[in-house]
Image (cartoon, rainbow, N blue to C red):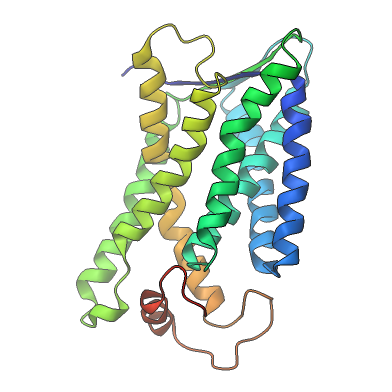
Length: 261
């Protein structure tokens, strides 16, 4: 199987601009009282770091960085950046936030614009190049993906009440589109495509990562969301009417984006 290489190349300014955006984005979420969303983003940023540095680097030795730069600190920023942004966005999707469009345009707009801003104001800076190979672990990720959706399919097959079935298309849409937005922003901004001579290499990384990397966690994240939201609110307070897991799925299925809770 062709080795899939996930490579990024960017100037140090890109990191600092993104940190400013992350703080701004977090403050917006707190201002809108999205407390659980913020907490999920922080926790998943830490999880990304444990996986990226602990598993991909220390265990599998699949990570490398250009000489003169700290792999630990760059990975810490990357993990907190995409861990926080991806999973706050996923949580907003799952909750069908009435301002999901605004949040989505904010995130996608930043992913697209930040590389170009960086290129304009730091064109002469030596770039940071960081990459990882994926051949040693994509099979494990595929197994996790299949097991998660298999569990959802089995649940739906045994669920006689249609209103309490999990919307598989909704999970797929979130899992694929969130990663695709990230990958497309990196590719168009010249960050992901740096060093790739052939268009096939660029599109292979975009396609496989979009289908696999974030999507593999969607069934599990959805179950966490349902288990939490059946008992507590977005503001971390107990619900007045605690309901069962299946009842919460049915309740979630009746909600639509742009409709108030």
